[in-house]
Amino acid sequence: MGLDVNSIRKDFPILEKKIYGKQLVYLDNAATTQKPSCVVEKICEGYYNCNANIHRGVHFLSQHATEAHEAARENVRAFINAPSNKEIIFTRGTTEAINLVASSFGDSQCEEGDEIIVSQMEHHSNIVPWQLLRSRKGIVLKVIPFDENGELQLEKLDSLITNRTKLISVTHVSNTLATINPVKEIIKKAHEHNIPVLVDGAQSIPHLKVEVQDLDADFFVFSGHKVYGPTGIGVLYGKEKWLELIPPYQGGGEMIQKVTFEKTTFNELPFKFEAGTPDYIGSTALSTALDYVTALGMDNIAQHESELLEYAREQMAKIEGMRFIGNASHRGGLVSFLVGDIHPYDMGSILDKLGIAVRTGHHCAEPVMQAFGIEGTVRASFALYNTKEEIDILVAGIERARKMFHH
Amino acid sequence: MTINEKQDEIISEFEFLEDWLDKYQQIIDKSQSGEKMPEEEKVPENLIEGCQSKVWVTAQYKDGLVYYHGESNTDIAGGIVVMLVEILSGHTPEEILDSELYFIDRIGLKEHLSPTRSNGMLAMIKQMRLYAMALKAKENEK
Image (cartoon, rainbow over all chains, first blue to last red; front, side, top):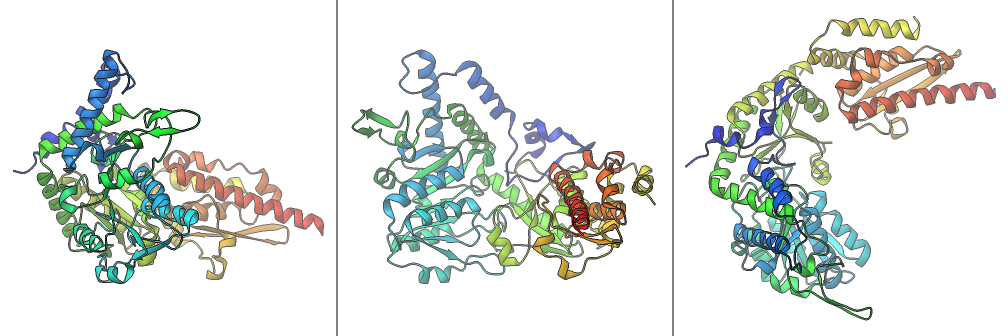
């Protein structure tokens, strides 16, 4: 059964907005998705009815808020089919989750000369934390390259893996090229060498049904705001054996068992990694967002977005001078492109005046731009509420811009 | 023509364009028909900091007057720099430093540009004034 997009759109009041007097066409979903009313209402309801600092509180409201936060954790666990609640750590987002692993795993498990492998298509969030680890520990950062279509050259992975490789950290879906990487295959290969794998799920979580046990991922990270949840909440899934092994990331309240000035013992999982007051409002609203997409069906969402993508590429290909950046065989719901030599900022500015929101620039993946010898692209990214009519508006907008720039 | 006469001329070109896309068209056309800078001048030293697009500006001093050249890798920033060059070129440093660039508000550039582009435009103006100031100081040394 497909999605009833017309009725879904009513759940997202912002889509009714007029921009410069024109109907908003929101195609910047890979940056952040819009929020359904139920998520916004859950935030309000949390503050109005269920606000008290969680854990250790004896009073009613605190217990009620604690239950809601822990129920959210259970919901996240079920959503990605993790074995245990202990393995679900709430973070501020994907970036913080990767930094946590780079810090706690990296500092405790890596020595000078040890190696971390990433791919050439990573977001800066999956590059810079490892570079910081390199400055701290003297590790070596190695890169799996991609080919001209934007597919990872997995045959090169064997030669990159050595007995010094400590971790492979790769994106599930590229935020720039749309490539869906064969992470299951990468994980299988890594595990043959007993190397753990971190999967950056920022772009896959809204688009694909993710099962961490099926992937056998050691770490899987994502942001709530990319899957119709609030900003400022994200998730680190880690296999219990790794999370037990590595030390806490930040110190403070919540994460301790006993503190004296001589010695502090740490709380058990998952609290060991959640220093300070957790974002219990964010976690419960994220849980509502996950319920929302689950009710629609992740498979239906994936199919809808794939249809939109194929339709968009088909229509856009008719535009003179159209060049797609990223032509992998398996793609997520976004398209990166350039038209003639029109600068992406110029294209984005004209589309903006037409009410069309797209992203322009290097998309925090400068190495990808360097590989193609370009400064940036225009990126249109789709969500469950987008329609073919909106893609027609985008295509007409690009065509209009093309003429304005005399191409 | 004085700086203000040149500004008034640009204002009159934009006055009858009601739709912002038409104004953008005018800006794009200015960029595309503008004089191109020699490639060897498009170097990091001539890049304006604070612009998201690449904008290069150079200035020469001849017979007491400042002559600018400017270009961008984008057409919208390019059109803006072409207008600034048109308005400010061929004037004395004093005239440039004393000028009030009211055409920006009058054609609605400030309110219709994105904040990053708007900041970029301010950075261009600042750099052009700095050039005028530096050239004037150099002249006074002689």
